[in-house]
Amino acid sequence: MRFSRRVLVRLYGEGVEIFFKREDEIQNFEWMSKHGQGPLLLGHFTSGRVEEFLNARTLSASDLRDPEISAMIATKMRNFHNLHVPGAKKAHIWQRLRNMLNHAKRLCSPKDVMTFGSDNLHADIDILEMLLSEVYEEIGFCHNDLQYGNIMMDEEQRTITFIDYEFASHNPIAYDLAYHFCDMEGDYHSYQPHIIHTTKYPGQFMYGTPGLEERQRFIRIYLSADGNRPSNIEVEQLVNAAEKYTLPCYLSYGLWGLLWVSYFCSCYCCY
Image (cartoon, rainbow, N blue to C red; front, side, top):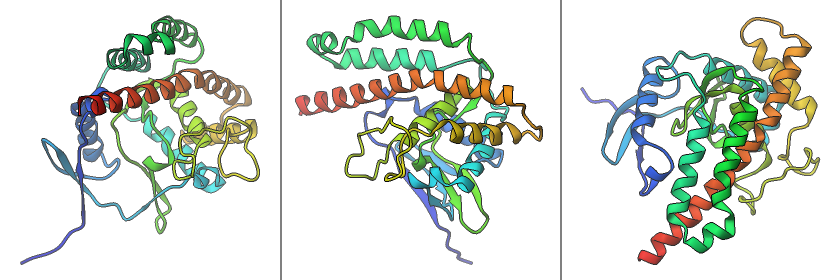
């Protein structure tokens, strides 16, 4: 008896090991698959893997500003953060930033290191870690890359699924919230995908920094997902913490850009 099944086959690109550890992603994926989170992992091999095909659509930049969809994302994010995933329950963002910086410095020429002030960034990361560790340290299992392309929605079931766990790890939940808010500032399918809009949410665009009321609404729904009614103080505390964690988010963006430019320039020069 023969039957057909739609699957998704992913083939890994070259050079990604400078951005994340593939074995960590597979470990996270296997755990998520076994516990009903995300698509099923059907198999993996050296250069790729086979996943369940989700009957869902990838969100767009404008979807993140839809109040109904945003509420679904907030609830899903809280549930995601509450997952009891194996691993050290501590902030991993700081070591990840240091690793990214070290990779970038190895790829850059001494002149570029001086131009970008890369040597000074180690001290900046140390200061951020010291200051922010005193702000809000609830640790959860975080996605760490919740831009719209990593969020899918089943239109019929009205459910949200997070995909792609390359960067998933335990971290302060305020960081994951901040990263999601920061990712509202860009549209990777616009004619300027590399530009982020840090101004308040402008009426003529469907992206830009979410305003205070929008962030408060999101975080109130997020905290309510536990079945409790958060106080105004609890909401404001997490809103303020997420705002402060935008600093390592922007630093991460900068290091990403430096890594990509350095990596492709080195590949081009070798070629």
